[in-house]
Image 1 (cartoon, one colour):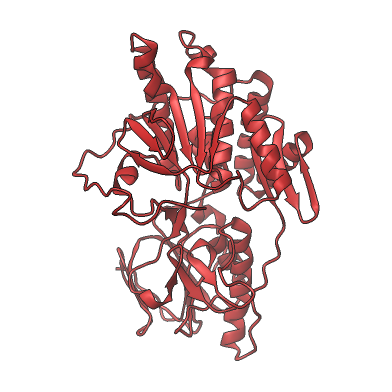
Image 2 (cartoon, rainbow, N blue to C red):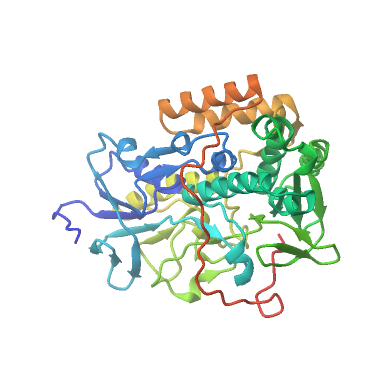
Length: 442
């Protein structure tokens, strides 16, 4: 059981070491509080580059950074590897795998996970990619299926192993599709000389009529053009019905034989038990007021993907992007101090710094307010922003070297199968689409 030494300072418990949790803890470094940071992993993951881990361009360690090392020297912070099993907001404590912890202020920064919209069959057979273990599972499955394709005797038998379908044309789906297309165009025949790049299909599917839905029309059109020129088959305005591990059925289209379906069609907040269902809104997010305070509480905050600031100005909350979480972490840190001092709090105002996505080598799209550009300079900006945002000098150097190597020889990454991925063969309760919640429309 975790014990808390008696202190004259209030205890702020932060659940989650993502972008929001880290920013909050950092902003409270020199304040008269004690901080306890809880996370089920002992590292922070730089999620925007996770797709490159999944496709073998980067090693997992390049985008992960030790939480303990990140807060080295911060005397008012302790970190524990733990999972929260329940929150009691009435009595101000959390149940965890290391015991019961009482708090003065609680910040829920648990992030999000993949949303399969109630379709258990797709959840069982499709591959998510919301954390590093899932990204590595995806990498090993892709590589295993390429190896398996070599053992087949005919193109028909080889087809399902080399058909890669991405469901969801948001930033994750677009970036993964571009990365897989580059692997096919520049790497496939080097690593697997028995295969032709024409043998491998990369298919991007979405219910919506455009890729990169939240971005501008200019960015969306440019991204789609880039993908098509790279050989990606883009299917928009279509609905995925079922996937049984061998065949993907899309409404109005011939079935696609594939063993590689990657699901990036939706996310949902990770809400700990104990939070009232009355404050959980669309997307499984916790409804908060304009200072990120959970409705019905006086000292519990929710930030980042799991929180939704519902006001007249933001009736649907803010987008689930890193900048929202970072800015909310900064705002909540200030407001905790204000509350301690009985001062007026500051409402959260999101400053949109812009959006960007990369499609591949020399190809990216950037929206900076009214300034929108695409292509090589957008790609350079995307690389620069992501490189400086990584935690740790070593990680920055490792990623830069790997990117430079990939750019020079078109064949970065080692693509080793360190462990085999085996899907859980447990019982599957199939829920067909007509019985399940509607499949994604965003």
